[in-house]
View: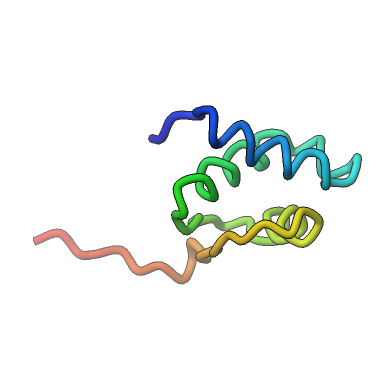
Length: 76
């Protein structure tokens, strides 16, 4: 779990201002994306479509990884 800090807030504001009215209703996705972007981390999600829409609207760069495509390491 990563904190929502000042840099993430700046990124969230950029995403929010570029997002459509419909996409602004997904505040949780905006906050999650902003934390990943501010730390230059990939975002692992099963819901790539919503994040892709935010990325396209805002022009931010964020690498999305499909949760279904990530293999779990076996425990031994």
